[in-house]
Length: 290
Ligand SMILES: NC(=O)c1ccc[n+]([C@@H]2O[C@H](COP(=O)([O-])OP(=O)(O)OC[C@H]3O[C@@H](n4cnc5c(N)ncnc54)[C@H](OP(=O)(O)O)[C@@H]3O)[C@@H](O)[C@H]2O)c1
Image (cartoon, rainbow, N blue to C red; front, side, top):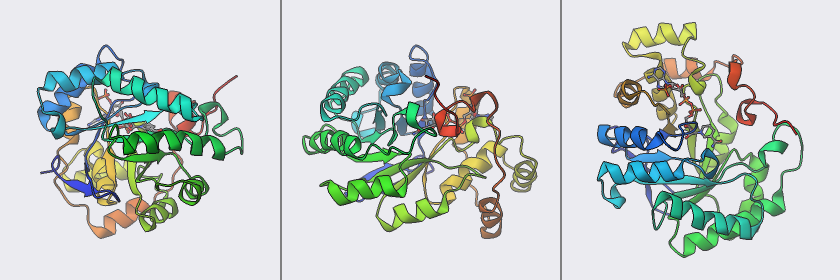
């Protein structure tokens, strides 16, 4: 039920609402995690060129024995590729590494190359249009079934909507309790852009939160399940990552309802999160050195 639930994109295609994240799972281990997830019932795998694990993801897809049409696969063009040729070439390499003749969804990983994130006001508008042109061509050629963006703010999306031929269908964003970008989510909804929430457990850093622990007790679920269900009930695609098989299984058991009052309570939490040793990642506010 949870794994089969889909949401629709502006091009009429369906996307499974529950996804499986693979960031930081090494290439030589990710096949096992992907196969475990698919065996349990997940039908949507999220990877990226910069994760360095597309080959392993492809291996896991094959090992699952599932038909190609039964699994939804997303990858992302490197944030650094801001010209058409680099982006176009990278799409071919991704297909080759994944061992697929198409991907279901392709995203621009970030509007800014990572070393500019949290460091510069340059939004790389020309560069994003160039990368997007390559993605539009791949979409028209049937190599990718949908195209979108990640970590895009309103001005970045407007650049594409105004100047490109095809509007983005998806925006993948950091969304978890205490990090709910309501204005951006609403803007995306108004423009028929489906939002996907990444790091639903705050990269594992919000699981010790006392308010969440109390609420999880009330619903007789784990804090991880509460966190995942929260993003699910916002109406977003949710992308939990887990390598531990019992976590993978637990994270799919979110067939319960958070009340409207508790959703409001969770939305109102704005406590800054300490991402600890993971704070250096640009997506958590860190800066790339050099
Ligand atoms: N577009 C972007 O820029 C971007 C950025 C970040 C993430 N993402 C995507 O979103 C996915 C998820 O985000 P994330 O990996 O940052 O973080 P996350 O899913 O919020 O948290 C993952 C962490 O939580 C742990 N965990 C998972 N299930 C658990 C459970 N039931 N109980 C206790 N701990 C649990 C995992 O441990 P184990 O692995 O040991 O099970 C791991 O340490 C990524 O893998 C990636 O696909 C995209």
